[in-house]
Length: 333
Image 1 (cartoon, helix red, strand yellow):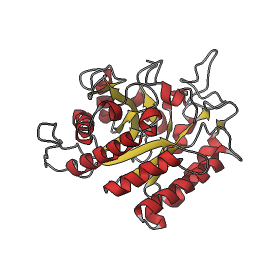
Image 2: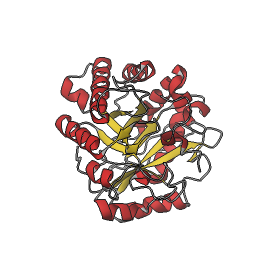
Image 3: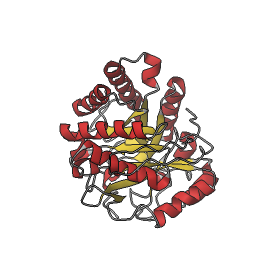
């Protein structure tokens, strides 16, 4: 992975079905019941970042592509153990909540992503697993979430103590929110997770975390052979082996607990491009193995660049509008 913050991760600074209510900690927030499940599938929920530039209206994207779910990024620390959008915007009452309400009003729903490459990380600012779980719970409660994505990168990912804190916090969240879906998203090599990634998965297994999807971001490789589609398949096979080994799963179960979050078009790596053909390769793999998640960074970039277009706002390749989203939405789990 790059030492410098790539676009995928720098964006954050550029800018239930039941009635069971369980305590998270003695004085912490409590779980709340979720609204009914939206149409479509959360397994295909591309990222959209609403905090900078000129992001597309999510309901316009829904109408144009048929996508029903979005992964909205990023929730960060406000400097302490308290979650805010980009570390600065309140969870409720603002434009982010309005966007979520509009998505749901159009028959869709959201996964909220916590983390990313840049900014203050809750995993580091919260001093214990129970405190971190309390911060995650605030996000869940704010939107009655059915799914939460922890995008663990940079200093959060490289610190073994923080890796353990994150998985222990997620176990608390899973216990206190029956049925909630959790994803843990991380970088990767072309052969699968690096040593930190493998350790994270092992820590999850050792903690008894029934995580729904261990997800890799197969780009910014710093060198690979073959197409980005084939390199992604290789990385996913390495991830599957790591999850299978850590949890003692059979092959089919292991595949169903892995996922992918690609990057469309030109990535942060010079000469590295993910094409729609690569996305079709990933789609075929996802369908064959029924993986937990097929996402990408990002809807903001799923359009052709105009004159002077920013790499944060367009793909850098010749494409029709939403060409990549229209491939991902074909995945139904």
